[in-house]
Image (cartoon, rainbow, N blue to C red; front, side):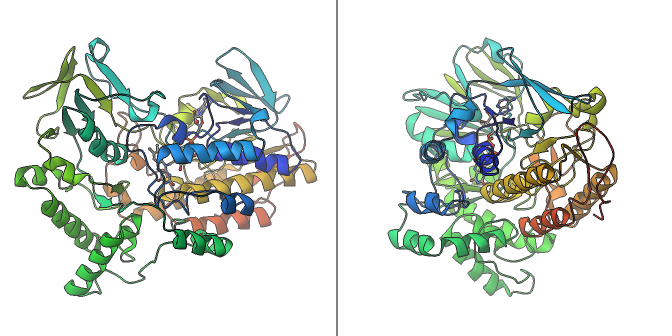
Length: 537
Ligand code: FAD
């Protein structure tokens, strides 16, 4: 059983079929595509170039699909997901509109049973959570929201029929990646837009445009080679990396490099030098450059000052990629509200009241993000061996081995789970790596007459220590980010993704597999005799 029909679930189903196994996917949404099914807000767009944000596992797929823009917009990515589902004949094993409401492992039979929102109970030997890292949207718990007379929306659960903001006074709460994409478009539609900002974020221009046919041809002529190069990068994105410290360069050299990267646009800015997320002084040089660009773009110096990110090193919160975000604040119909100076007190029937003022609005857009990485897993009652709840096991932060499995929850796999590079990478690269690893693992079990697998406690402990050790060598833990669980009240502050790089990480996973799944305990049937070797990492 696979839960989720985003890019992870679709590929997982295809992969298992390829191994001659049968599988069924359960998906809460009314269609496939996951993130790209739910996030239909205006301006929703990928911030990884189209040529790189797609499946690599099928040469036919990558050759026949044509992207129209350098960065694909949500409708095009959703069309691609649907194309894949049709092309690979996946739909016959996908149950749409079927939210899984709980899952439990039966030690006697060695099987998982899931319950769906329709009251069905379905069981299988293996359960694969392809539930996404950013799929449990978070609406802040503001007093008065239920009494609001206008319409309110979360970017991560946008109405399929769209929302018409023409002639309306609109509030956007939140200025992370989704807010930064939506704000310029909503500003063009609304009579007035109020942007409620708690944290100013760093954003780099996308310089999006139609995909250059020569660029596309060059990619398609060398696709396999380029995909391999992308997999060898730390973040799974093929970008020219400057393997030099920002601190070794002179002021003039640094300015030259940053200007060139800024002119190219996109996430490549953060690899302008090799130590931007490792060294505060190096990071400051990039952050200062971006702050100067914001001052250049925003005419009102007071507004520009409020938009300057100052409370975290650049890149330690998900860096945004925008199309005209800062320029939007030069429009006469846009007002920036600084929630640091004056927090939201309540939602009134007709608007938003902060500490100092009340803003009358017709619509509220919450671009307030997600209970990232763990939310879709811990919001579900998932009971493992001995009836233990996953949410209880992870009460002090998620613990996994390689982000793939967690001890005490036999036969439960996660695609891009906490403890894997996931959200720090091109997710398509990470998804493919996990899906293929899980497929190979299940094939190995079948070949060896094994039906039960889970990581050893030692392997999990040493992996948790390694994930933390690597994170502490970076600047990431200095930001109150969703990587750290900081956006969810009460969530433990633990850096959840693995910052060691997708290239290094793949090698570690492959080494475990090559050593007969080192770090995992495996058994035949329902017997519990451990057959695996100990983990060394
Ligand atoms: P998802 O696409 O999230 O799919 C998970 C599916 O599981 C969902 O459809 C959900 O409905 C379903 N599900 C969850 N729980 C249950 C349940 N209990 N029962 C049934 N179904 C369930 N990544 C990048 O690499 N580059 C980008 O530029 C990028 N941009 C993004 C922009 C936005 C706005 C968001 C939200 C994410 C973005 N991401 C990006 C991350 C994106 O989530 C991944 O790239 C990728 O789409 C994840 O695929 P997935 O299949 O793992 O998860």
